[in-house]
Image (tube, rainbow, N blue to C red; front, side, top):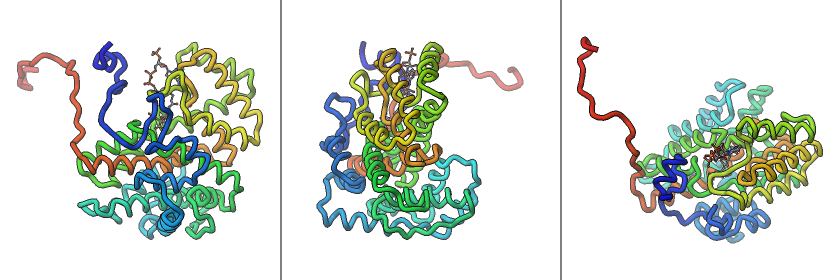
Length: 375
Ligand code: SDX
């Protein structure tokens, strides 16, 4: 079957190569690599900031470069008076994804990027520093009226986020797990939100507009929103027996099991799953919940092996075990993927061509016009 037939059959640009990129390999059978470095090595040995640097500058930092990079991100944490004022206007009940999108859009007005994009690297660092502050400031304000400050002994995004969210020093194990999760989520080739960012960048729009658009794409439950939805699935069962029966019922009713399946990963599975599953098991303080997760995974392995668990399935339980409210699962994805989005925005800008595909017309033949009084 030709690609165009496959695309027609599957839709969603499935199987279509939509451009060139040097940043990431995924689904090619060579594993998941960022600028050639295997995700397993990065997740095992790096802080997230090392990987964010790799994505921003296409090389791993040395100790001095990392130190300077981290201090710039730390200096970018504080919220302006205007940003705090806007966040305080957003009521409880609004999804934090929309809070993040609004904050990024406001940054694009108050701290606009230069027209020639010569300050793009500073803006990327600002986004890395400010997003955890946006999430935690709003969370603490709407749940108790507390206006948190942005001082911290935590010198990484992982530690700073956990400390500011919970307003207490996070256990070292939680910080390590968060580093791992941020690294796993950082980049994934032409996924829907990244491609959204590239399309915006290809029109020569600014970085804040492109990231705001990407956040909109990530929010959907078929994409980044799946980690929140996966927790809804896992927590809907009381025990392993219920989970086994429930998953079989859902499959029989052709319902989607959130956290499973992937556009580019088939039987070989999502390489990120094994890494984050280990952390979920290590952090598990509710063995029933982990057992239910494994039961769901085993039913899917047996009944629908072509739908392996993706990065979202065990991220859900790992975040829960770290005491993170479910509605913040996908905003964590933003804190991480902003590094991947911005890597693609820089790459698109460096060799730009407006992204504008064609459609296969299936509409009516040419029509004779009829005046309104004759209709
Ligand atoms: C992410 O692209 C990326 O790289 C994304 C991401 C990243 O890092 O950026 O990896 C992050 O978004 C991971 C995916 C998170 N989404 C979910 O977990 C939501 C549940 N998964 C499905 O919605 C689905 O698997 C997709 C959207 C992820 C991929 O679907 P495709 O490639 O469009 O395939 P499809 O929907 O055409 O499914 C093919 C068949 C269908 O059945 P039939 O109509 O052929 O009978 O498989 C079925 C689907 O119904 N199917 C599922 C299923 N996923 C696909 N059935 C049950 N449960 C599922 N999860």
